[in-house]
Every structure is written in structure tokens, then in C-alpha cells.
Length: 363
Image (cartoon, rainbow, N blue to C red):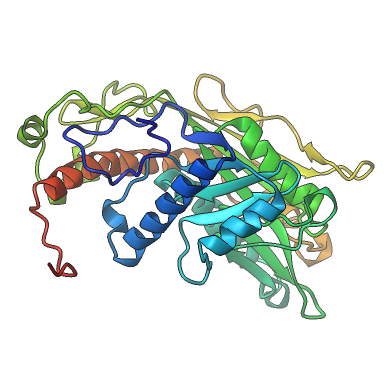
């Protein structure tokens, strides 16, 4: 079985074993496109029937090598509309000829983005209300209008900052690319897409949280054995998550003696446009803020890094996001992830036993 292509809701007698690499790339073929179409449509159905709470996909992103014409055909065949649902989302990078299907982000994605979104509001409250009212911080949304080598691309960031100019025009100014055990090369390609493909993007904040290779801890157990070892899925909560090494706050996390999240590390990079070449260029050093290495400097992000705000209007105001703030956010997200992974296995077992009431089903 190719676990990156078979539908994750397909029934099985054992708990599924997720792939080692959460980001997979496939060469275009008719069979591959057919499987992507089926997978996408059934995933959309899961969201629309409000069963997304029990739907945890095997992969966070699928990447398919294809031309812009082929992506457009796939887009139309899927009858995809971003107004219908937020996830799964579809995007295309014309520079690398890659179509991307992105599933619902993990709690790690959400918490990293929320840290900056909330704290930039704190900073904005200290400047002129007229200028602050022009600031827009939104979640993921579909963005087009890329130019140059990236013409024809579209993208959904993990978070996006916008700014209303005095003439009323809205421009995109800062994008967030947050990875959870994703290939750095893929995150970098997305970063270049933003900076080199749009003149209005000033900054990209890249955060990658890397987890040691994860495998479902109950993959060798029968359903009855799993049920005997865990409470009902409705009883799970963060209070049941335990550190396997109390001295390592980012080590493995377990529930009922089984490891659901492995040891994690994280780094942050800030990318901007080089004034001479127009290319994306890293601003400062990579900062490892979770792991063996410690950050070389305090996190220093100003409003002028996120928006075209003149220093005289408060552009030098510091956004009060600290390394400790990010660590605390990610620490909580890892506990939530442990619960979600365990919960999915227990819900899948209950569904196989037909013990979950489906009020929408009519024989």
C-alpha cells in the first residue's frame, strides 16, 4: 500500500502507520491525478459533513510536478472554490512547476502564527490610531498576482499581514511560512515565491519545527488491545499528556505509556529582498530556539519589518515576541498534537465498530 496516496479514511484492522516524510512529491501521471482527485474530493466531503474533527490526514502536503496548464485543468476538474472551504487548499508554484495540496495545519502551525499576530496588535496599540487602523493581520487566504518567473502562481500562507495605503489600496506586506517536519528546501521555495514574485511583500518569517521520525505507537496492536489501554476518546485531554523525560520540555510526549509526539527542535529565519539583486536574502542568522543550540540574539522584530510604516509614525516600535513566548506556544501545541493523534486512532476504532452515531446517514 502506498500510504501517501491511499485514502486515510479507508478501513483497516490495525492502526495506520504514517509515512516518515510528511511532505511527498509525485511525478504527473493519469493514475496519480485520479488518486489526487479522489483523495481531495473525499477530504472535502469530510469537512463539509463536519467530520473534520475526526479526520487527521497522513500527509500535511502533497506536491505534484505539473505544468501550469495541467494544474488549471486539475483545478477545474476538482471544481475547487476557496469560498467553499478553507482546507484542503490547492496552490501552484510556476517557478518550480509544482502543484500543492495542503491539508489542515497542525496545532504547531496555528500557535506559531498566532504568537506574531497577537503581539503585533500589542505593538500597534502604542502608535497613532490612524496608522494602526491601516494594519490587517489575517489567517491563510488565497493570494494570486505573482509576476516575473512566478507569474501564474497562487499561494496560501500560514498567516499574512496586509496594509491599507493612504489611497485605499490594500497591499500584502509580510507572509509566514511555518513547517512541521517539512523539507527546508520546500519552505525556501515558498519564501522565494513571496519575495521574488510580489513587489509588495517586504518580509517572510520562516519557522520550521522538526520532530524526530514519528510512527503510530499502536500500529502493532489489535483494536481491542488499544481500547483496553486507553480511555474513551471523549475523555482525552492535555492533562493526560506526560513528559517521558521531565528534564526535557521538548522531549517525547506520551499518553498511557505510549509515545504520541517525539522530541522536537525548531529554528526561525527572517527573509527580505536584497536591494541590489531583488532576490530573497536571509536577514541575520538562523536562530535555533528549541534544541541544543541557543539563539545568538534576542528576537527583534519591528513594525517597520512587517508594514511600510515610517519610523516617525511608530515603525521602530518593537513587536514583543520573545523566544520564550514561542517556546511556550509550541510546547502547548505539542501537547495538543499528542491528544489529536491519539484521539484519531480511538475515533477510527469506534467508527470501524459502528459505535459512533451518524445522524446524517440514511440507509
